[in-house]
Image: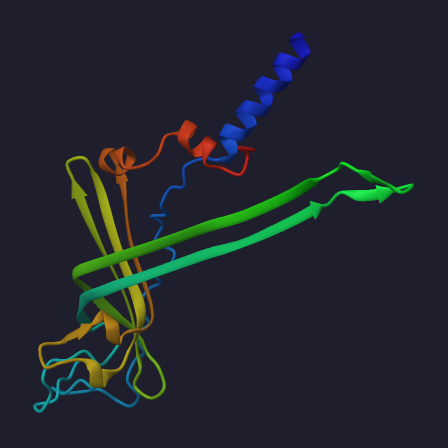
Length: 217
């Protein structure tokens, strides 16, 4: 009996450790150093080809090291609904018969009826609004800008981290050096938090256990 209780307790602990609450990764491994290539040719005197600005330029980002403000305008909405119905009815009747010339007083009927009515629906909606300033990390062939940026907000009860990376066309940048997040190709937007406020919105370990695949019911 004691061995059985010990094995049950170990299985319970193993199930609890296997449903550990996921934590956001705050490492900076996805923000590599900015690659700024030196300009070809000599750069002497007053003019410097690396830091020079054209008199006709409007201040939009176009080279590694430039900053760019991204306006977050993300809205996603998804819904799904399914309804299933089917039924089947069956009847059978047995009338009085004749056996050895005599009528057998046997009269019976059988009936069966099966019905199924099932349905399900799900919906999800997410909205993200705000701004984040990113840095041009690299200029690809054709003038495509690879941008990366991060914003960290340290609050009283936690920390909020916003990250964004992707590719921007120079033609999509307006005269105020801004671009909408909807115009970013291969956009990776991450908004996570940690601390007391984030922990209060997370389910406890017992709730996660009953919602995990370990629960047979």
